[in-house]
Image (cartoon, rainbow, N blue to C red; front, side, top):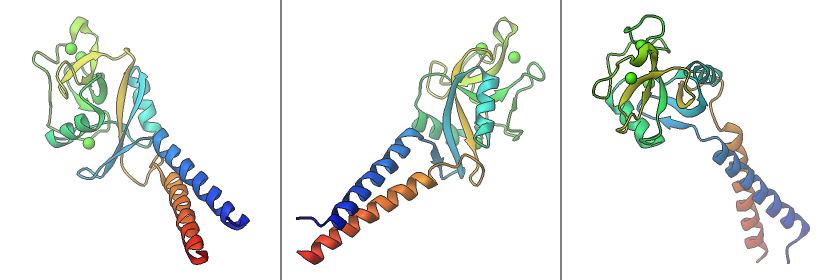
Amino acid sequence: MLTSCAKWVLVWGLSLTLIGLAGQAQAVPAFNPATGNWYDVVGPAPWADAEAAAVALGGHLVTINDAAEQAWLVATFGGSPDLWIGFNDIASEGSWVWVSGEPSAYTNWAVGEPNNAEGVEDAALMNWGIPGLWNDYGNSAPRLAIAEWAPATAGVPGPASLLLLGMGLAGLVGLRRLRRSRG
Ligand SMILES: [Ca+2]
Ligand SMILES: [Ca+2]
Ligand SMILES: [Ca+2]
């Protein structure tokens, strides 16, 4: 028979564990140890609105700096559907830049892209037909997008969730110890 104290510890531990797990499931940013940055999907939204959502997380739409980062993105977020990235030629047709301002020589265009189809394609999607490959597309189309941000800025995920999860697990461990000491 559990004492009222032990029952309280059990309920406290279980509920905090569940709250912690729910927090984890709700927000699923991913950390890339190779770049030291966090990533998450935002949208679906037109490119400019997706960028605004990425800024709200403390970063920008993703800058894909090299093949390793590209491969990690596909492995983490999937080879479909199409996802906005930070590459764009909005300011000057044909002059592609990253919205983060980072200089990067890496590109991963699909065959025949960028083609500025119908003169309105000024932002890049990845996963065009083949996982990872890029296509320039009409910026006003609502699409999911990938945000990238550095740690120690607004939007770093999970400390509250992880704290609750840890407190919940600590409560359960405490209960086991309590029961063992009584048994
Ligand atoms: Ca990057
Ligand atoms: Ca263009
Ligand atoms: Ca195109």
